Length: 383
Image (cartoon, rainbow, N blue to C red):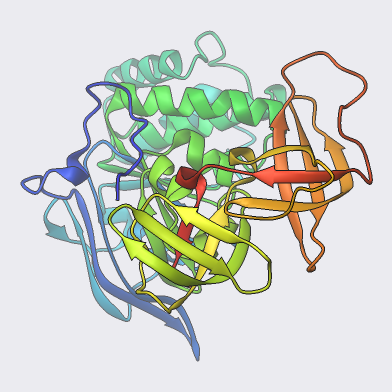
């Protein structure tokens, strides 16, 4: 199966190099809280210089895994290696790791410069070196000239950058970020995503970020680990995980997907033909299916890969073509979302870009429509 690759030309991808040594190794790590298994036999390699995202919903185990990397929790089984050193038994204060919390945890009585310098002062570093490091770090996060302000005099985005500067000024080998943008409003969050990526690239420090925000992970991360009930559902670049989900769970969690059940009728290197179980239709894929002929599978198609148009009187469902009636239309500004009811039951969601300034749609509520898509948009899933 051909994998999507949207990395900038020449961007390093050490996870594709069999000779590259992982910077962080999580080997068979398990963590229980009573009868609850929070992290279930997780193994994961993270490479130097990555901005790696642990993505999952509440209770997926992502925060517990992050806390074990920080040393706040000790694994019940398994090993954690950082730059070749086993740190599973190393206390948090002795690890070359720093953590930026969602609340930022700034000292309200201290100035910006004092907040950033706090960790260096605790280490007994010379005042001149502290001043040099703090000044350079504040310039990096674009807070130069704000050294004497206190947290209550800053915006949410500025407080976030103070917390980031404080985390980076000690030059950790690994920086852990717990929902780093969760306290910001939508516009500021989008702006700060790119700022964080630029800072990470300039410092070269390896970042591991926990988030439940799919857009945040997709925008910022070099790779994403989708977690569910304590295990890794899939690991890959944002494009790989989105375009080639390996399970129905991943397809439905990351973005929006129309999912149909079917039976494999034809299979081969040229693609697969799947007969829909509940619909009068067939689905053609351009890739070899994960199961043999006769097996039960699921089909996932992203709404933006589909097209919708008015149906002719005699048009019927067919291969990669469904016929239904428009139940709802949502206007998002940059695109329209059509919800189409199918005669056999169920719905299909189709998104169409808003490429023209229009006030009246050529398709409206109640219209009989055709929804169709090419074979390359059909993803066959084993479960």
